[in-house]
Length: 207
Image (cartoon, rainbow, N blue to C red; front, side, top):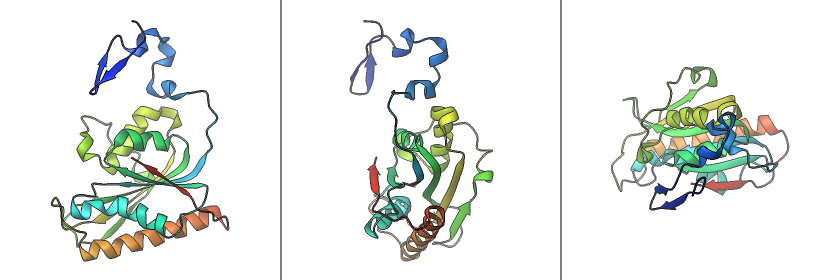
């Protein structure tokens, strides 16, 4: 049946949905218009990483600690992006600004914190062959540009925390644990400067 899709075990059956759409509506971002008036998110904080692999959990743990400390207000969403690129990209759709937190492996001292401003992110290469189990901050941005097009937020920053232990089942190393608290405090200061005195408990988006 044309235009009807059945999904079983990740396999799409039947004709592609785009067969019935006009050419102008076949860009990915055109398909995201669901007709609803979604509330804007002034700041979206996304933690990328695998919580089962030691210091790779840095991003999601930053988000968790911000949530445990009371959130950052109703205009801020805290999202555990985990390793799900599609979820991360969809959450960016309604955000004015985005902060992404992830672990890094550059050979620097564990616990080193990097802040990558948005201007340095503009030259990222297009997304290509991204594996769902290895979705990193740069993949999130590149995939978001592909999926969202003109709906992609223009103000994006990235915090990276240098890790030491990335083996399956490892706990957070002490330097990374300390850096997580430091990054959480930096994000709180950014949110306070952005939103002023407004402070109500926010909500968490789960991957």
